[in-house]
Amino acid sequence: MLPHNTIHNLDCIEAMSQMDVGSIDLAFADPPFNIGYKYDVYEDRKDSQTYLGWSREWIAGVFRALKPTGTFWLAIGDDYAAELKLLSQEVGFHCRSWCIWYYTFGVNCKLKFSRSHTHLFHFVKDKKTFTFNREAILVPSARQLVYADKRGAKEGRLPDDTWILRPQDLAEGFHPDETTWYFPRVAGTFKEREGFHGCQMPEQLLGRIIKVSSNPGELVLDPFSGSATTVAVSKKLGRQYVAFDISEEYIERGLKRLSSIQAGDRLDGAPDPKVSAPSTKKGKQLFQ
Ligand SMILES: C[S@@+](CC[C@H](N)C(=O)[O-])C[C@H]1O[C@@H](n2cnc3c(N)ncnc32)[C@H](O)[C@@H]1O
Image (cartoon, rainbow, N blue to C red; front, side, top):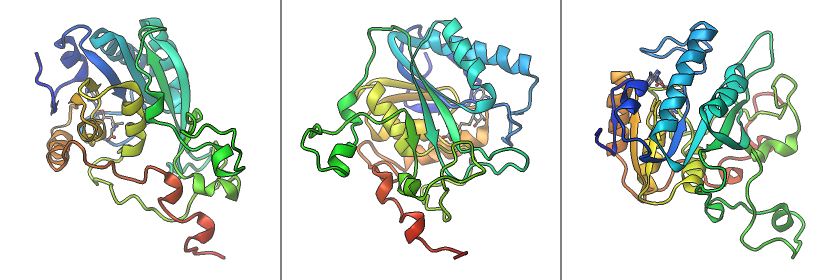
């Protein structure tokens, strides 16, 4: 059996075939999107059939490794979102939510709208029995925040299925060159950037996924560790974890990130993104 609570320098398909069947509570995967992104080892431009064949293999590996009550979250870009959703369903998963994580500062495109969202598919193995800790991820409702409406539940409500990183900008309206057409912020505020991996996900996003779909002490799998965000958040939230990456350098630096944190540490980034930075209107602007 592969040791837990570490990141292994292994190909995930090979590694998952060595894992005990039905041993994982939650899997989170943020695979390469096959869009020509620059990784140090992985070549992110395969022909479609090769990419899809490979995707089917690793998704089947996740299915095999998950407990019958397990959950699988898949982060994927537009280019293959439809295909990977269907593939996951063919492998046997049921889709419970199709969330959109909206962000600003996506890759700028010249002859099409700039990328500003990632699809987050919430799959379960069993339609009826799965972990969903709704009380762990409640947010204040509009009734509470805006309308002072006493009918609003005191504990708040579940988030919508569009996850927005900077809602403080929503009031500013839409930007015409992005797919979701919200006005993006001007200045970067993410102090937590590790600096060795361009696809580092925000800890707060992983925090929501891990809190809602697993319980303390349970085992979380990430087949594509990258900068080690999933394992770092799992450790902080008191989960067990195991992850893989084919890059020796990402593993080395991911292990350093892991050893610098403890269970119980706070997650990077503001839990309420509204207070993470000033709204664009209140920020410093280059152009008036
Ligand atoms: C999109 S990145 C993951 C980013 C990660 N979610 C984070 O927050 O940093 C995808 C990663 O998959 C790794 N990778 C590609 N093919 C792999 C394979 N067959 N097995 C394991 N890892 C692989 C790449 O080296 C890359 O680091």
